[in-house]
Length: 296
View 1 (cartoon, rainbow, N blue to C red):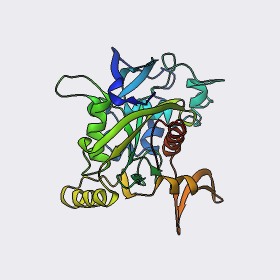
View 2: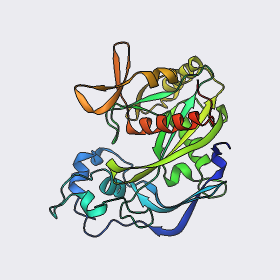
View 3: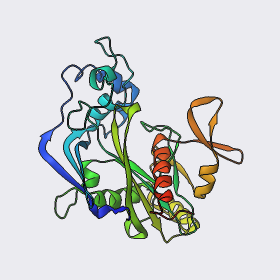
View 4: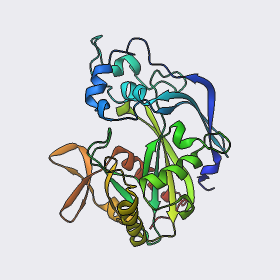
C-alpha cells in the first residue's frame, strides 16, 4: 500500500447552507472576542471559512463535505472552550459537553478544517516556521511548513468554481514559504487526520511533501521575496529554521518553566512546539514505521 495522493482527497460542498452559531451563544461572546483576538485591528474575521460536516473514507478516496461559515463563528465555538459564558457554564459545556466528541455532522461547533503540511528538502531538512506574536493560535511556536484554515478563498478554483485541497496548497505555499511554488513540491500525500480536544474537536488533516530544492536555496528564496515583495506576513511568521528531522525527534523535551508545552532545544535556543507540529510528527512517525514514507 501507499499513502493517498492529495488528488484522492476530495473536497465538496455538502449543501449550500451556512453554519449558524447556537442562539444561546450567538451574541454572548461578542465583546470577549473583540478584546481577546484584537478584532478591531484586523480585517479577516468575517472571512468565509469551510465548516467540516462529513468525512467519508474508502480504500481509495477520502471525501470531506463542507458548509460555509465564517471566522468569527470559529473563534466563538472552537477557541474559547473553557471561558465561562453569561449562562454560568463554559462554552465547552454548551457546545461539546462530552463524555466524547459529537460526530462531525451533529456537532454544534463551527469546526473549520485546519490543513498542515511538512515539507522535506533535498538535503533531508524540514522547513519549520516560527509563528508571530500576534497570531490567534500557537503564538511564537514552531509550526509545520504550511499551516492554515480551509476557507473559500484559498480552496476555490477560479477556473471551475470548485473547492479542492490542491487549490489550497497552490495558494498557501506561496504565502507560507515565500518563493516556493506548488510545482516545486513532490510526493505530496495525505498522512492522517485528527480532532483537537483543546479546541472543542476542531478537525485537522496532515500532509507530507518533498522538494528538490535544498535548504540553502529556500533560504535565499525567502530572503529575496521578503525584501522585494514583502511576501512574509510577519504577524503570521517571524522566521524559519531548517533542522534535520532526526534532530527534532531527539531534542523534543519539556520545559520546567512551561509544563503546558514541549520544546525543541538546539544549542542555546529553545522553541515551543505547536500542537499542530506535534501531531504532524506523530503521523510522520506512524507512516515511517510502516515504510510508507521515506524520512532520513
